[in-house]
Length: 242
Image 1 (cartoon, rainbow, N blue to C red):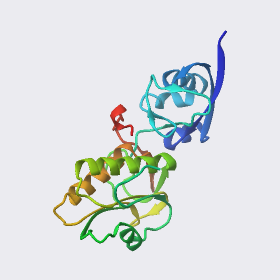
Image 2 (cartoon, helix red, strand yellow):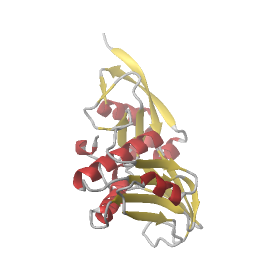
Image 3 (cartoon, rainbow, N blue to C red):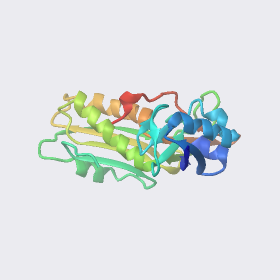
Image 4 (cartoon, one colour):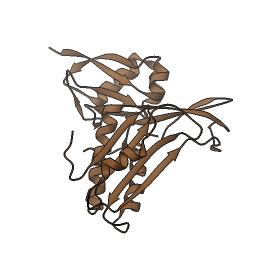
C-alpha cells in the first residue's frame, strides 16, 4: 500500500513569475526523490514545465540532484541558474541586504592587529548593458535572493578561499537586493591579509566569480522597452555542496 506526502516548493525569479505565486504544492508517493518531484511539478503546473530542464533544486538550503531524497518537513526550493552557522578561522561579514553599504563598518569587522591590507571588488548598476536579449538602456535593476541559503553559500565560498589562499585573514561578501538604480552598489567582496602579496587580489576575484556561480541571487533588468530576468549558465554539481 503506497503512502503519499504533500510537499511545498518555494519558487524564485522567473519560476515565480511563470507560476504567479512564490510557492506551489505537489503530492508524491513516498519514498520520493527530486526527480519524481520535478515530474509531478511539470504535470501539476504545465506553465512551469518549459523552465524545469534548466531549473536548480535545493533541499534544506543545499543543492539537490535527481536521486536526492525528499522527506516530510524538508525545505524545498526551485530556481533558475544563479545570475552566484559555520565556524570560521578568521572574521567574516556575510550579508544579503536592501540597505546601502557602510564600507567603514565592514572594514572594521575585518580589522585585526595582523591585518595590513584589504583588497576589494565592488559591483555597480550600469545604465548601458549592450548584451543581446537585454534592454539597450537600463533604468534600474531588481535583485532577489533565497537569503538563508545565500548566506550559507557565502560561508562556503569563504571556506574555499581559505583552502586556496591560507594567508587570507578576514572575508566579507555582500549582495544588495531590491530595486537598485544606476550607480548603486550591487555586490561587494573584500579579503584581508597581513600584506598585499598574500593572495588577497586573487581571492577577491575568486569570491565574486564564485558568488555568481553558487549563491542563489537573481536580477531583473528593467529598461524602457522591456524587462528581463538575467540567468546564468553554471550548473552546480555535487562538488558545489558544502
